[in-house]
Amino acid sequence: MTEEHRALRDAVRGLLAGYPARAAVEQPEGYDTGLWQRLCKEIGVAGLAVPDAYGGAGATLLESCVVLGEWGRGLTPGPMLGCAVLATQALLNADKRLLPGICAGDLIVSVAWPGDFSLSAAGRLSGSADQLLDLGASVLLVPVGDELWEVETDASGVTVQPADVLDATRRLATIRLDGVAGRRIGEISLPGLRDLACVALSAEQVGAASRAFEATHEYVQQRVQFGRPIGSFQEIQHRLAEAYLRLEAATTASWTAAEALVAGSAEASTLAAMAKVYCSEALQAIAAEMVQMHGGLAITWEHDAHLYLRRAYADAQLFGAPAAHLDRLAATLLG
Image (cartoon, rainbow, N blue to C red; front, side, top):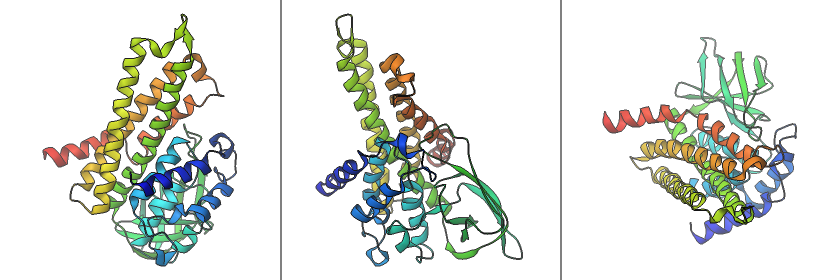
């Protein structure tokens, strides 16, 4: 990270520290709207990778990944991943009319992807998506082939149903369209959107893994067993060392993929898939160690360890399971 990245990280971390995820999930929208407004207006997180001509900061995906890392550390609910990253980047290649509202924090837009949608001869949209981010979105971006359509969530024929989720800190919904009138706003590259989603999610996963590791490292120095801190036992030290190596490798995989995407590298898609696979597996392993080393305390509702484990397994399935991306890597690298 550069000095600017570290300053951005510290500013976001300072704001998020006063907003526990447990309290935010009880909000009707699934996140703290006041916090989102502060982050947008004081730091400009929703428009980091948006040109200043549309109300953004004119930065890059790297700066968004710095914020996403802090988002993951606190398991913070909110529209950072779906609206501020996926939706804004989709709109930059289409109709930019909605971008100023998103950057100001006044408009929440969600991309109905992954999904299966079709367009009738009369220009009506039908289909569904099962992993809709940002439950409180007022506008949907619906990909149909390589076209991008805009739909109001309160339009006739739109059904949004909250989904049963493993991870309560990331609310998801199922969206169904039945002959809905939409507005074509441009084109979209679904492979490009997939790569962006994988890289952005990997930044969140690294943030969550980092906090899970830190919390575990702190706990084993405080927990005393047989008259000494359990962190002094060689077995615990070896397991922590392995967790640390996983974290460092995941950090490198995520940041390298983000740099490649920003640079338009020919290897960006391959690196995005690698980041999705490795960061998913690293977070699962580190969160599992967090639960194991905290012992019985970790399985109580009051402790956060189980929240990190839930996030790890839920994130692994978001935007495609690791096995699906491994198949894609095999076809690319071996085919």
